[in-house]
Picture 1 (cartoon, rainbow, N blue to C red):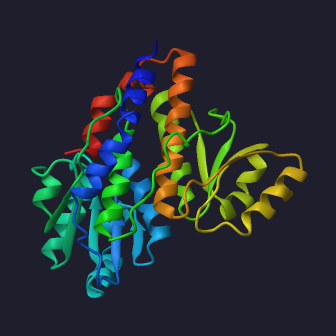
Picture 2: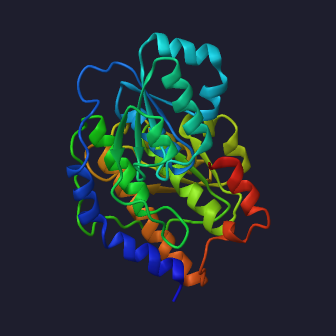
Length: 305
């Protein structure tokens, strides 16, 4: 049996327990008057940032390196007294640490969401929201990603997400190189997360797009899309998808789960992880592709402290 399958499945069996604990153990640090919150992170954490940006109108998501090197933008954000919400499970992402350090040195406030309260990121922050599970499923982020979503939602004082037991199944999603994975509003985060897992596990040249951007040119590069439905932006996209199908494209639609954005982020991520686990078992994949990269140590040193 696939090592990856066993690891992901084992983590998913703990979802309800871990996420309930996650909700209890984080305080709603930014639930009141903050009008401007900057969420930043890399990889899976960036996926969380863009998802939360769509859900909470106070939040703007930024790539950490872009913001760090754009002095004019950073200054304007500081002048607006925005709170920096720095996301990194391990607390070791170089750009996020550097941005937090720079932000605090200029008088800004930083809230770190991390599993390591003694990490460099934690030391460069004013407040810490601890992720209760920071492990990896045979080398890929699975349950830790779900914990990050819940921790960020709790920090922001959002409504508690609802987990629907045994309801997160999707029918034969095409986990291949050919489709473009497309999202809208918070579901764009699900498209990003799905593609990141395909990068890590299979080393595929998979792609993600926002719906509008996909229609403006990437649509000509494929005849197959996987679209993640949104819980908060649902009215127009179905019309778009119907038209796309009528022109001969294969469209697979991933449903939204729950009535709010955070519940949908969790539900779609769980459903995708289950589908990925099943595929790794069928394919006999024991470990993620990226671990075989000949320059992995160098690449790791580039992005982590």
